[in-house]
Length: 321
Image (cartoon, rainbow, N blue to C red; front, side):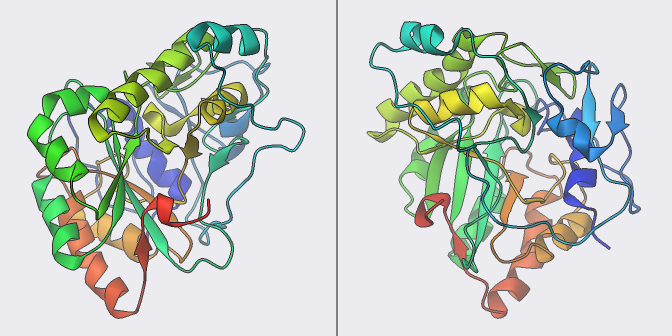
């Protein structure tokens, strides 16, 4: 039985989703181990309001595997419509949002896309490359697998990973099978108050939120000749002010429905199980920066059956999310 999406996420605390540190392989069994210093809390904790006391490294979890979550995209709250990108850049963003007080924090807050629209039977594969110490590898086997099967994907690349892999970036950017997206400048959780996720300190204020988004966006725009359309923060955690800033700067916040590789910590059999169970309409998150791990062989085991069954795969920009 595959691990639930939230339960699997706990594994990321010491792995690539949290900070792209060297991978430690998870053990077998239906309940993942909790990384040192990480306290498992109810799933509702992920969306706790900013007035609540924040554990230093709280991680959402689930008591047992559950049915596949809804793949319906969650729109921003109607009372808080996205604002257009300010013309003045950082100073204008700070002036506009500096006094805003966040009310929600976690993986699924207003503005985060957690699935494809109703009626879309496709699946969107997304792969993060986090950069930094232990996170700048390149999983050529995974990319070769996608290319060999003609499976498109959205690649979320961190600025540090791009700097460490210029030739690989050029190859990926020139391949129409892939869409390049923004994975931040320093791979931080996106918070206007410095909240942490899995022990990784988030951006401390509106100015740092802007830097985390806009720094890598400018890099990508210069390299690609166009700005990125989608953003995912380090650890995929946000507060609801930060997601409004992302949207105001012209990008969409991409969450996920299924955690395919547990922050690059799962073995091949577990990756196969998670990916094979991804429902139509799901956004799958996994990692392309840990060669030799379970991600590539797990996808290699899962994709043929999905393709044979007629499953369609898309880039995020191929859908009206």
